[in-house]
Image (tube, rainbow, N blue to C red; front, side):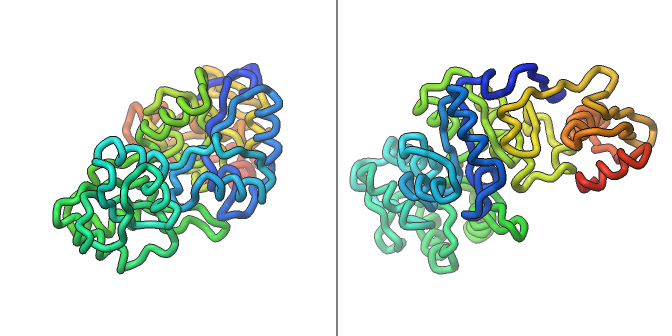
Length: 341
């Protein structure tokens, strides 16, 4: 994708389904994100089918529904698709019934494995034929040590996701990918399968489950949500409520570029102006010169971000390097400051 798309229609009228990421889109570590309940409700009112799709493997569907209810988002269990569910389903396809699977993660992950007819264990002494690893706050040295022993003995290694961080109100915190990296360093091998986003299996399961024909992926991460949409052949909306900063968007690689961007989930119910061929969007304009990109004009900071992203990607695709950004005028300078640029 060379640039952001425009849409004269609100997105909740253009697509038949919305596949929402959770942490960073609807809540931050169980604290509600502003405009999230209204955004989901507006999508439902417009007739969109809804999926809640998460790489988090620590909660089962009932717990996800309860948490969403706590932050004001209506949900049902059949709308929830987790990386733990998809990982358990994959293992059930590959292993005989009753096979021992070592769990690195929460009891919710163990329950998903048990539900598909496999035997969750916590010790390498049980001779597991596979290790499944998902994020949980209680994961520590003991769980990682048992996994290392099982993996060295030849067990298959399935990771629910490889998110290096998870968002929080205090900033990004270590995620499952960081814990996977610890095991990679210890056993000197890579996981056999990564199930969660950006790999297409979770996306495909979500589309199948809700019966979508034209889904829109809604997320806050470039390397999982947006890359997962690209890998699944779907359009995407990046919301700036989670881990992605404006500078990250401007430096996004081609496989991690969203179709649309908005400040929050209000962007689902709004048209999205296209960036014109002259570099303008809304009241802003971006031009490239020998020193980088120059933002001028005034208006919505999201329109400025749209124009900057398209211009930055064009420079990157030509030169391979992200350009510097500077302002022409006080309104543009204030906007760059508000974007953290």
